Length: 295
Length: 226
Ligand SMILES: Nc1ncnc2c1ncn2[C@@H]1O[C@H](COP(=O)(O)OP(=O)(O)OP(=O)(O)O)[C@@H](O)[C@H]1O
Ligand SMILES: [Mg+2]
Image 1 (cartoon, rainbow over the protein chains, first blue to last red):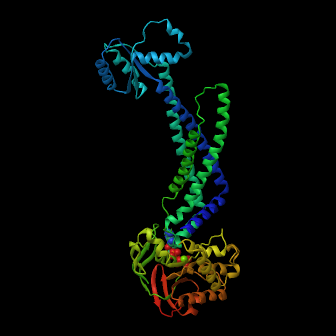
Image 2: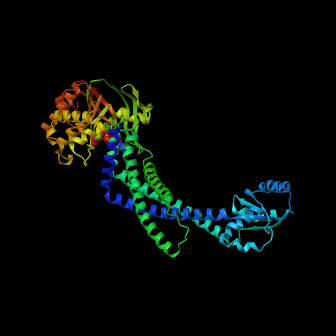
């Protein structure tokens, strides 16, 4: 087995060397494609983060009338949680609300000193599974007689999310197109490689090599080219990303851009897997059938 | 070892390369296949190693009906058949040793075994001193020998050679013929397609004569033509 693997790798290098220029061209174009995919991944991941951040803050708040009995409140919570699109309903009592306000005000509690009793209403904080339900839920909540008033995240945030969503989807479409092109490149390059080694392939078939034995060197060639391209793409992207994020953060310090290790590793893994997939899949495509027939 | 029953081969361009061939070549036989150019000799050999399938009829090699042989099993048939091609089919991007070793690498033989077997064969063939040479630096006769070395290094049951003495001087040709006799004596069934009247007559072996795709004669200890 090991013997065979060594043979495959040797043949793969022989093949790559034989088509030096084509090999280089493939690696460069594959690297370029992966860099673009990487850029879109970075943008898309950051948007995801950002949207998740905003969305978690988008809730509908229903202020309740005073003096509702515990049963009524319980029933209200029960009913509202069953509305379509509702993820969770959280009851905030008057006391909770006051406590929270005090915390928010911190060192300025004297503001509250002059106010008698507890002027804050109790409320229901409704989180949603998707922001698109917000308006509809707010409308329905407003129809309860026990509810005084409903507030929910503004139109602006909603529009912002729509724009980001659009960017993300476009990014995904571009990634898919790039992927397709990259596979096509790999396919034709391995085809050239197969063609230039037609004689070896023919002789292998004639002296009794199985079709998989013939395929492996080419698959390894595709694998190595894909791996190398992805490593180059990661290196270039990593450098550029760090540089630009630093620049950007200097201008806008609170920019919601992730620099977490976890995030970078995730992108790296995706790019490596993608590179290898393109390389191997492209090779497989151009070697679907090994011919044992002579003409 | 090799049987053909009513074998016809018609190429897509409507050329009838072989016409109703019935032949039996026994294990250990040495057979010449002669006939003018275009008679169908190469086609005959291709049928045996399943390079092509007959249009009609049955080809049976070592008990296997090739028309029913699954494509995935073709490699295993070919490991039992050494072929010396009319156009050599050598690999010019590697040296003599590696060309011979190729047949063994392809079946996943151990390095130590490859080394031993290849060196042994190169000794027999008389190419030991050139094992690091690139084949395109070899003479025609040496390339021919190299092809034979590659064909027999895996000890096949059958050796098919297509014009092994084409374009060679009579002395070298006879040297190669003697090599083939030797291989035959070791137990390999040998089929030699040849134009070489001189060699065929000198060899005194079975001769099958093809003309326009048909067997016109099949004689023991035959000569090239009557
Ligand atoms: N792949 C092919 N397609 C079409 N016709 C073919 C093909 N291969 C061979 N032929 C034809 O079949 C006939 C027999 O060819 P073959 O190569 O078997 O002859 P041969 O006896 O080996 O000749 P030579 O002595 O010149 O090598 C010829 O007329 C040839 O043109
Ligand atoms: Mg011929």
